[in-house]
Length: 485
Image (cartoon, rainbow, N blue to C red):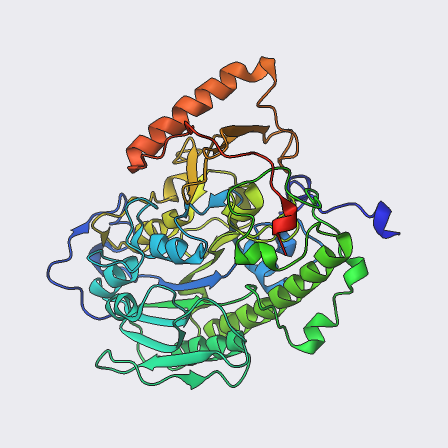
């Protein structure tokens, strides 16, 4: 099949075919709804293994409908658990979207109430530690050493940064007194080093007390340098383009000159995007292999059936979609992430379409493990959805990016506002999941547009976001691409 005739991967249609240190005395714990579940009268509590990837699109897993990427271990995890098909990052106040995403995950707080270094805010791992869990972390931590120290009792091979050469990544270990030693080079590929550390922690346990093991991979974030044997599996010319591929974004979204958008020249060409995707998929398959190694450690230790396993990404990535390369936008490909849960209390072989934030994941684990969350946690546990008592905990989701974009979506419709240029987009996600047909100017959709605009303003007010949706002195809508590299 020639590249011009190759069909793009299409997640929605494919989905139908496939299935710490002790808690500080000042910390206030608030009960999570259902927190008593599974812990009464000394019942054993499940372990928790939380696997977190970096810049991972929701559709970049085989089990989620993308045959171009090989993820056998994640596919197997999905078969024995539940896939959340609509799990979203709440957004970002900066270009490094992973910083607020990780802070929100750890605290359960939304974007406008979380401190990026979690100063004065309790964390969910901290709460698990206070509840008797042995807590351990390895991998990327982009929110400062102090927040890691208060969140986890043990930590090894931690990267306090955003990105870097995975073979030379500076790593630090946490001593029993909570101090961190000097940087040491990763030596091997960082995702393998993180998997080694997690596997040692799991295999080295000598008692039956519950544990929380958090593994934050720095893949598939660029620079995407997978081992050669993985990259060799992905021929550039065999990679399908995203269904929403465009050579360039049709207007100035407010962030077209950021570093991520400079990773490929304008206009984006199919050849360049396919090369980036081949690198991306190779990094994901390599990551998948490390997930398999950690799950093997669980299985070999006899703890697999007693462990809640979560795999999720911190946010998505454009990588050619809508003419963009980064995650500094509010399209589905950049705010939606993979999310898979498996283990005690989680239905097997299910896909759940409930709208959820990524900061709902730890509250869900709290419900399943009987752990009360930290004060200020806003996330909603999903066990009522798993148990069939509610179709969704949320009727809509609000997302935001810096002071340049705001969005609201419900079960069907999505509105994106660009206040600097007084532009809005309206998409019918039921018929247009790739957000290619803007209906904002359609007279037949005025009522939908007005309803979503009012809903967006209401959600802004509830979140504490005071950004106006229109500017008195708007900037030009057109972008001068001669300014771009």
